[in-house]
Length: 332
Image (cartoon, rainbow, N blue to C red; front, side, top):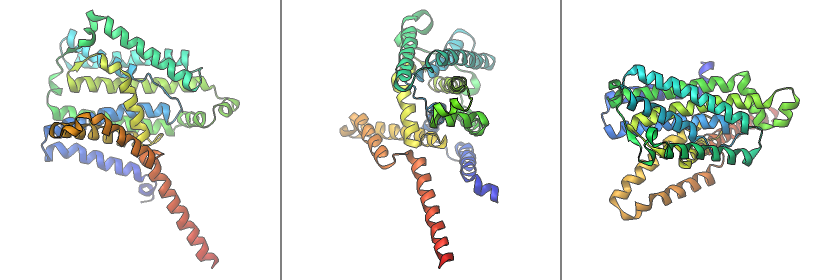
């Protein structure tokens, strides 16, 4: 019972995962299945970004390059070879290797820089991958992109939905363990005070690169799932919009919470879907991006620490108030 009280958030998460696992067998809706699949994919991507921003204090504007590497890896493998599970696993392995190497090199070259200098350099590196995808038409088909077949196991939307749900849950548990490990504690110390952490004897750059590699690999996996869900890939996967989506999902849900990244991804994807549907019914919503911007502003105004962060703050205040009242009664 005490374990449940101490891990209330984890218990709630597992209950929701079990509910979502059985949902497609109870309630059949193709549109809902596609929407939730997108939520799961971007939850993985947002959590990978939260590891950098929320737990290490690194602001990156080039996170889309890892997402794009994953999307193009699976697309090229499925286009050039037979769409079998064996080739799917080869694509996953290729993505892990490439994203790990690229994130290591990018981290080695750029993480020595501070704040906005690092952010600008990662943006320019992401731009290089975008230009490469546009110009290497023999491999990427340029801006037009290309469609591809997928393994027959994923043709059934329910199977793919369950895969994305399981991967999202696994990534959350992995990152939860990672951030609570000694390595994760050092990353949080770097976020709070990098100079003091270095004085204590920790090689800050090595820890930052480790966070960058883990984050890049997970972003690549999100890219794979995204491309499979569309069965199409083009240069938009390297765009700045993808990185900004991850940034906003993390901020809206709550920086440094993981759960917040998933909540932010869910809210943004549902709002995007809802506003797009309203645009078909009323001309006012044809410029739905304006309403999207208003939604962001309102959330940031009323939830400055994000939804989860604000909720945690309110809970702590309530506990302190309750504790003070108890002490007053004892004194009285």
